[in-house]
Amino acid sequence: MQKLFSYGTLQYKKVQIKTFGRELKGKKDKLIRYKIYMIKNQKVISSSGESEHPIIEYTGNKKDLVEGVLFKIDNNELLKADLYEVKEYKRIEVVFVSGEKGWVYVKS
Image (cartoon, rainbow, N blue to C red; front, side, top):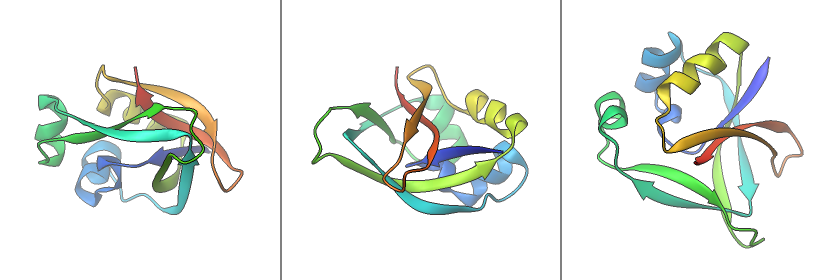
């Protein structure tokens, strides 16, 4: 199993069902030293219905904090998440406030 942190549209039930074919289970977690910004991308707009989407970037500042949900997914679902995300995002492995290690999409 893999762990994938979502701070945006992958938390939406309709996006999960469209992307993974099921509703994901997860728990709240946080990521420090990152900050959220908003972007526009037509592909993601058509999937989520939202006109802007969050993207995070490393700041190094301990005061910057991103809240989200850490989901358990399988390897195939992780590849599906890669296909869902657009060119502005890249996937990296990080350690969360909980001490758990997992994947997150950050600004490319």
